[in-house]
Image 1 (spheres, rainbow, N blue to C red):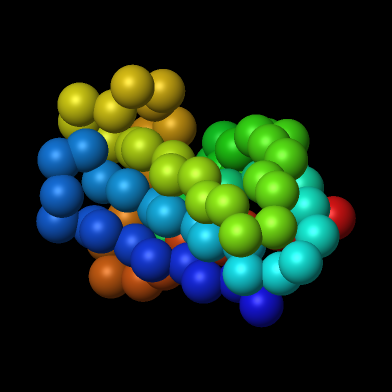
Image 2 (cartoon, helix red, strand yellow):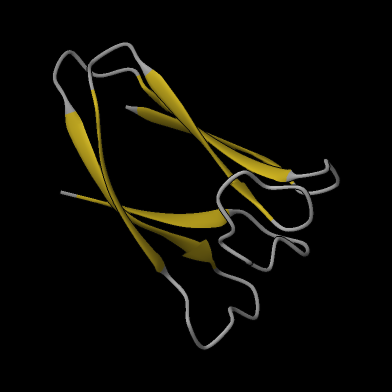
Length: 80
């Protein structure tokens, strides 16, 4: 099971993915569902071990600029 939490009104916007599984997962891409930009989804290829989590930042003030459109809906996270 995965838990995805989105903070659209935060600066920077954050997408937090928690891997509640007993094994590692690989997050391939992150992007918007609602009115995505033409350059989304973003390839991230990040491995997250079982019981661990990762946070992606976007928008103003982000450490790694994804430029995603957080608007009114959750991000799309694709896995392997």
